[in-house]
Image 1 (cartoon, rainbow, N blue to C red):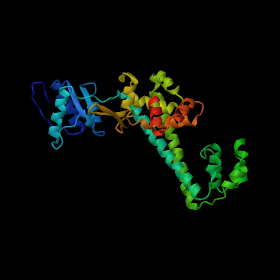
Image 2 (cartoon, one colour; image 1 turned 180 degrees about the vertical axis):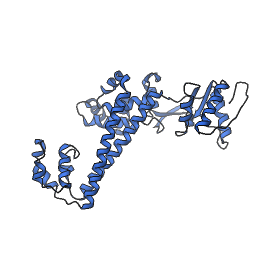
Image 3 (cartoon, rainbow, N blue to C red; image 1 turned 90 degrees about the vertical axis):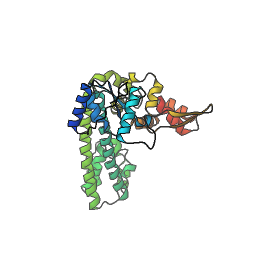
Image 4 (cartoon, one colour; image 1 turned 120 degrees about the vertical axis):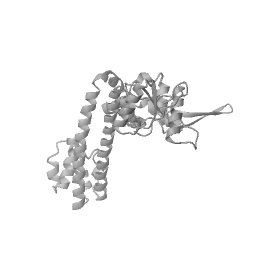
Length: 331
């Protein structure tokens, strides 16, 4: 602890809950006006959560408060952070309120579940292709209703006629000859076992993803207006809109669009020396939701109607990477 007179009081607290409660009590008793925490991994979160609403707490980016190299230990670090905090030299990190942080936890877990499900689907594709079963070359989605009927028919040893008797989709029935040709491969008993287990895992993740969708929708009830605005963007559905809401939080924190672009890590760095300035690369230290914009770009490029303007603009430029970055910034 450091005051304007230069008086220092150094105490050590562990990250156990009891010690963190003692820390909060000490800060309140000494009427500490402001606390600064270095955002190292996730270790700052318990301390921030306990102090939230009790003492003004600033979460500092470690890259912005680096001390002199070669002089580093916990005591020196704490004194340096206290000094720059006292002098108002720390740029606070954007920490959204608890409600938004909870939605963010849900949406990020939703992404992990979706990625896990995709991993099992890719495994099924790989095993089928390796065995010479090229059904994915005939059907757009082998995990759709008709696709699953065909896959289950293969796994259960049914003939093509028995399998097609269960399919109601006329678009699939007219492809009977093509599908029959694609099923001439042979699956071993081991392949059948692995595929069945993968399908069970996919069902499990489908169920969990629906539960998360329901919970996210429940937590977003008071943000319907913002969600409608986001979903009006071509390519943005409920899941993507919820993820954007969770990552950005309160849009009023950003005074202008360029601030949001910079916070997202999409703004190129600017270097100036001897009166000459040059643009560098975009940073990899931005927010984790950059991948959302790549997904949006892919959906825009797939939809020729909604992405007509973006496609025309893309063709007018030679540097594709810069154009894709421009599309991200526009979104």
